[in-house]
Length: 183
View 1 (cartoon, rainbow, N blue to C red):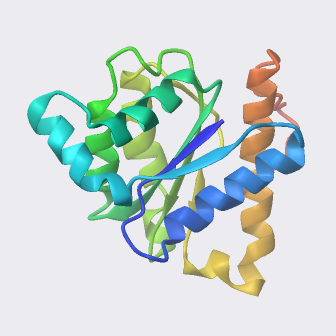
View 2: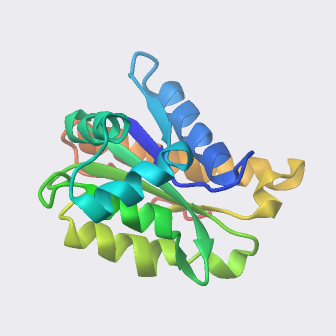
C-alpha cells in the first residue's frame, strides 16, 4: 500500500493523517507493506512534469510505486473548500489509466470541520474520473481530532476505512453491512 500525502507544511497534519492510516493498515494486517510518500519535497518535480510531460527520476519513482501498489491512500489539506493544487497536479501527472480498479483510502485535513465534505464533493469525483475504487468511508481530520479528546474518534474512522480497504483487497467488497453503526 502506498499512501501519498500532499501536505504543504512541515510538520504537516496531512502527513500525520497519512501516518495514522499507515498505522491502521499495520494494525489490521501486520505483514502488510506500507509506505508513506510526501509530495512536498517533489513539488518542483511535479510542476516540471506538468510543463514538460516527463517526470524527473525522483517523481517517476513515486509514479511507478503508485502504479505497482495493490492499494493506495491519498491525503490532502483543504484550501478554499477543495483539495490542494499539489494533490491535483500530482493526479494530473499520473497516466490516465494508472488508477483503474485500485482500492483507495481518501483522507483530508482542514482547519475546521466545515471542510469535511470535501472528501465527498472533490476527492471522490476525481477518483471516479480516474476509475479508482475509493472505500465508502473517507477520513477527515480537523484540529479537534489531534487533541486527546478527539483522537479516539479519528482512530475509529481510520480503522473503519482501513477495514473497508482490507476487505476490498481480500475480495469481499467493503465488508460493511446495513447494521454497521456510523460514528
